[in-house]
Image (cartoon, rainbow, N blue to C red):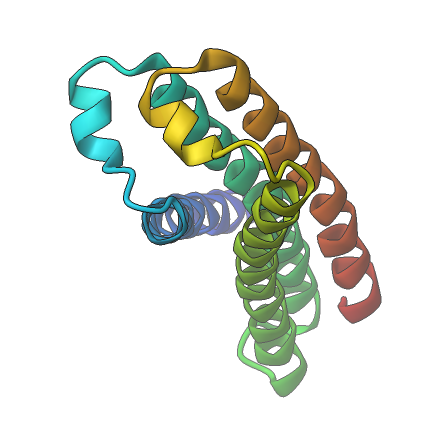
Length: 166
């Protein structure tokens, strides 16, 4: 039984790493699309700290939400093992947990997008992405705060979905 638990743990770890990399890639891609012409990779290569703060905040935000989704996957796998992983209930538990994680990633990216759009509307006289391109760290910190706080709030929702579905 010890080896079976270790194997399940390794599978969960590998799954978590794969999903985390995919989620970070999606987050970076979405940021590139909504950042109004800001070329993040070039700016990072130039040492633009403001862009670094923005990118880091997106990665942290996605990690916060994905972590709660991965917890749901762990719960789903545990439930599947309890009822038999290859039974209909076991397969359903794992699939629901993975669906919940994917939903969490989608919610995180959508919430970050929405939060940045709302921030843009609230600060009409300020072009956040233009300021970040110029290296304005204060604006980068403002946006990072919005992104990370949105993720923390979304994380609660993802955990609620986990509790409801599993």
